[in-house]
Length: 229
Ligand code: ADP
Ligand code: MG
View 1 (cartoon, helix red, strand yellow):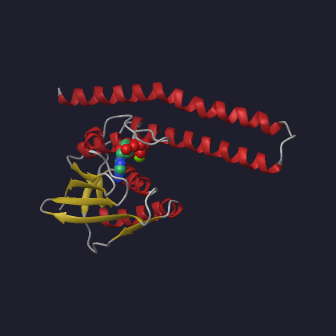
View 2 (cartoon, helix red, strand yellow):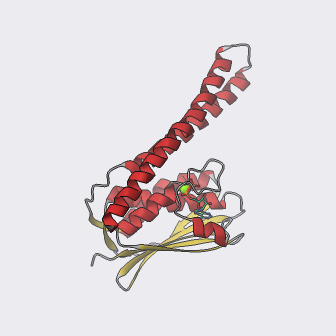
View 3 (cartoon, protein in one colour):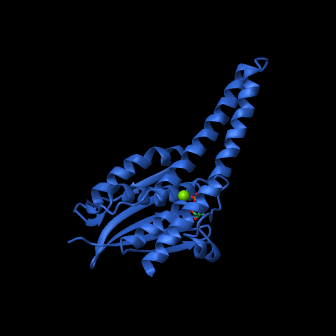
């Protein structure tokens, strides 16, 4: 019964996302068509043309992000789990996310645990999961000065713990309670899909996630996953 519930929840989620996806993709496309029409009419300055091209690129990029987030949750999750060293994976992900942090004037730091921490997971899903949390942490810091995101991984009894700490805008109690609910987003360009997907993954790995947050101070997410050895 529980499995059936999970499956139907997933199907619901996917259908729900598909419906809104059509809508979300349509708006940027309409905007891009509008700008292309203006650009073709070559009475406008080179400067304006470039500005419109930038807007079009932003819109297309946003569409691309929405689509890839959708694909990541709708992909039938082949449960091919394999041993993954979280220390190594996190170093790789910090490399991937550092340009995004730099672009947003946020300092991304990680401390090397210097020891393997193995869990059983699907590597692509695990990557996507960690990127979602780190991306949110960076985005929470864009409006503060000296924004910093620190990521730590360590062992605690039979669990691998990953903490993502930021000194960003933080969340109210009401916001914290809504985390993981599909489409909950406080961002003008947010999708509210990332954490829903991540929470589902953590649950499917028999892990857990907890949050501590304070408005104006920052947020800490703690992810626990069963250790492999
Ligand atoms: P999105 O990032 O597209 O808004 P997510 O599912 O990734 O969607 O996150 C949902 C919401 O959770 C965000 O819009 C934000 O309000 C809140 N949130 C998540 N992580 C943080 C964080 N580190 N600091 C503050 N708010 C956060
Ligand atoms: Mg997000």
